Amino acid sequence: KAGVTQTPRYLIKTRGQQVTLSCSPISGHRSVSWYQQTPGQGLQFLFEYFSETQRNKGNFPGRFSGRQFSNSRSEMNVSTLELGDSALYLCASSSWTGGGGYTFGSGTRLTVV
Amino acid sequence: DQQVKQNSPSLSVQEGRISILNCDYTNSMFDYFLWYKKYPAEGPTFLISISSIKDKNEDGRFTVFLNKSAKHLSLHIVPSQPGDSAVYFCAASWGGGGSEKLVFGKGTKLTVNP
Image 1 (tube, chains in turn brown, purple):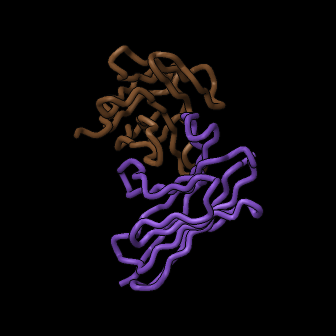
Image 2 (spheres, rainbow over the protein chains, first blue to last red):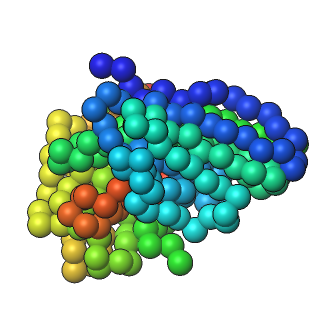
Image 3 (cartoon, rainbow over the protein chains, first blue to last red):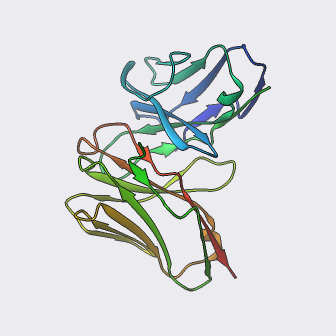
């Protein structure tokens, strides 16, 4: 069974640019969540999608957005990149059949220069 | 306001001994708690979870204890192995586990020395 796939693994962007990250969940998982990991803040929740609808949103500015497609694949977009957006962006999928928690992808390491 | 706190950023133990990782939370609405393990350059891996209706859950060498009155949970690893060296994150959710939002602590880096 394939895991959660995130592309690309590494990305370098310039301040002011925008970026799109992709996540393919485990087959059959309809919930996809995004998290930002930084050394100082740990893992912080960005948003969660279920059946193409955003169900939950964290405390991030509107520059951070996402969407989910009918096949449950998800993308997140960050516009007008700032240096502070440099982080590991993690995607997780879940079926929530109970007790199993989320399965995370390996993440996309974004560096803003 | 940090709702899930892991006050020890690091912990070092000898191989074969017990590792105890601690986590405190402030939101009494949390009803599901999880531990994740993370190696560098990889995503977190689910380890073990516990529902708020229980006070203990065991899976092999890993046991999670929940003290609701103290809003405290701990992860015990017995015996500790060098391969357990990683960052451990405590996480919590509410809504019977159906709410797809996890609140994470900042992690504890465990080092198990041979």
